[in-house]
Image (cartoon, rainbow, N blue to C red; front, side, top):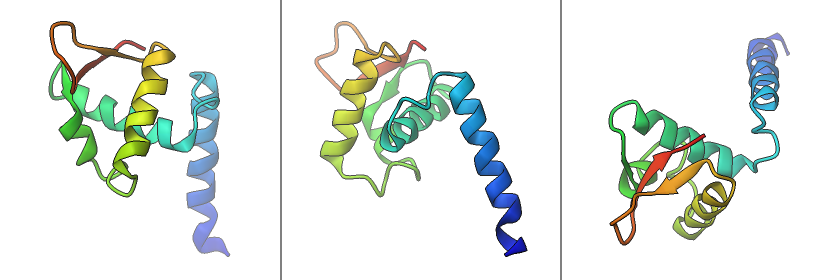
Length: 94
């Protein structure tokens, strides 16, 4: 199964990096949502929920599950709701 060897090596490297950053304690969904926020933050300082929902890592995940992941990421201090906005706009804090 040599065709999967490189992929397995990349996945092991990713797991090591996630562990070093303390992300291994997050669920797979939480990590994917965080990665979507991180990519969006490269383009803008505040990230709208709609931008995260359209990210390829997040589109397969149900909307309620994404919002639960956002709540857990906020509780862990990795995301912060933008003050003065009722909902839907966040910044990365981690």
